[in-house]
Image 1 (cartoon, helix red, strand yellow):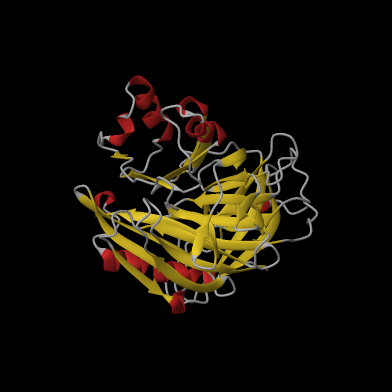
Image 2 (cartoon, rainbow, N blue to C red):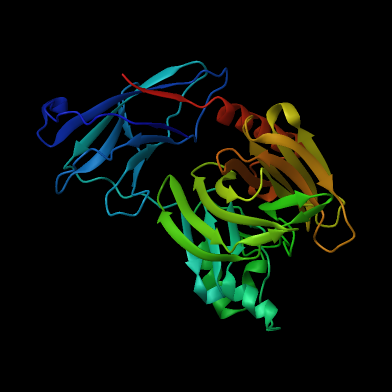
Length: 388
């Protein structure tokens, strides 16, 4: 979650006396919290590194003297990689040291646990997942089907949850099953299922603008751009047509990412036309339990879903936090628990996601809310990354 920019070093130092491995930089990562930390992604700028043909990047954990999984990303899709990602595992109040190397040695293959894609075979979903959770949202064809009265469309900018209970990727498998038998992913075949109703609600993290006492929101996304998939992160961009909030003209572009080991998706939204925006979680039949924790900047909802339970939540950092509201209405699917966000320099950042009891990650509501609190502490006190 932290990015460090450094000047390119002359590649003159031969690591371990090997002509096939050269040192780029030494990185120090510090944990200032009194809790152990893992599954937080560090970004190292490599835009000034001219990687020779046949070379690849390696991250060495100098503290443990072993290599760790990394991922390179071309963030602006210009054909040149901009950052290296890795996830340090750091004890409370500890400092770890890492070496960023380039090597001609072949890297071991890794599973792209963090995966996303546009899904034209299911109308035009955009779906993403990691080893813990899955999500999807809906595109312009699905919207037009509803507007034209064609069966099978979806008119919603809400975020759907795919309740998975296996670590391996399931998106392509579930859609393939659905091609064979429509609605197959609504049944659990041992990997999980999609039984989370969204409708016009905000689902888990859909946005809205409040004017007076009412909430307004966009329609489906109109275009997408996939940035990366891999072992540590998937990221993409969704754009929306300018929409109306009782006279306010709202422009919205969502930069969305999901990292390995996390239950919450990161949303960085470019927004114009409003000083505040809200992110909501659906209350479904309004029988669940809502909670909010202002000191840790989160809202949550815990409910029974079929034969199990699921917790949903939204977390942000202190500058963006502007309060919360449980909004209940008789209008179908429009009852949501909202986290209000300050728009700062035309941007908001928040995280939203869920925990499903059947996935065996959380046992009860308290477990889920403890997770949200720990997550909040981490994003509000990010790892400190410096060039040693």
